[in-house]
Every structure is written in structure tokens, then in C-alpha cells.
Image (tube, rainbow, N blue to C red; front, side, top):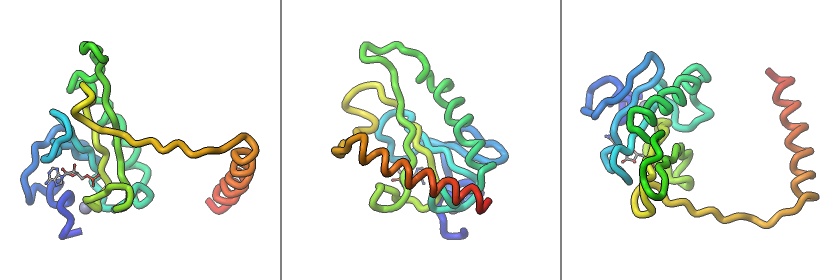
Length: 148
Ligand code: AMP
Ligand code: ZN
């Protein structure tokens, strides 16, 4: 995709603060960080949403994210509140996606003021409703697997 800003970053046509690059993935610092060392990991395959990306690219991404957590020392529990991080991947404008090339955010969470804030509107449900939904989904899953 010639107009895609992240494809241009992968090709080196626009600058980025590159971190890890593999055959399938590219990672770099976010230019509008929500916390220090907020970074992005992207597949070297253009696709707007997660379901557009071939499995071999997706399979490469989480190990890269994991390596970055260690490089950024997010695995070290050395703050009073405890060191944490969020891995975020938005799909669609309504889900806060601004760049239409799949990207995984790795966002350090060191205090309550920086990093990701999460709204979690828990919906009312019960075991009966969940059970009905589960049945529907099981049959859809079976249909999906038959088509493969
Ligand atoms: P999202 O809202 O999930 O689509 O996030 C897009 C992210 O890409 C934002 O956090 C931006 O700050 C980041 N971003 C946009 N352009 C660039 C760029 N040229 N280099 C680094 N990060 C970028
Ligand atoms: Zn792209």
C-alpha cells in the first residue's frame, strides 16, 4: 500500500526510531507516547485489521512484544505500585484505530497517570444467557472448522 504511513516506515521511506526488526515484523517508538517507551510492533504485511493478516506474520508478533518487555525491563517489579504494561491492538475507528495498518501497542504502565486508561463497561448477564450464546458459538465454530 503506497499511501500507508506504516508501510513507508517499514520501507524506510519515512523515519522511525526502530527497535526490533525480523523477517515478519517491525517495531519502533510511538511518536505520541502515552508513557515513556510506548512502542509499536507491526507486521510487514499491509492489512487494516487483525483478520486481514496472514498467520505467519501474527505468530511472529507476540515473541517480539515479549522481547521488548524484557529489553524495556517491564518484567522487573521495581516500583511501589508494581511494574506493568498493556498490549493493545485496535481495529476500526469506533475501537480507536487511527492508522489502518495493524499495529500492536506495547505501553508501559508505571503509574496511574501515564500509559493506558481503560473503561470497562461490564454488561449484565447470567448463566442462562451465557449458556445460550455459548451453544450458538459452538455451532458456528463447528461450521467454520468444516469449511477449512
Ligand atoms: P491507533 O489509535 O491504535 O491507530 O494508534 C496509532 C498510533 O500510531 C498512535 O499511538 C500514534 O501516535 C502512532 N503513530 C502515528 N504515526 C506515527 C509515526 N510516523 N511514527 C510512530 N508512531 C506513529
Ligand atoms: Zn501498510
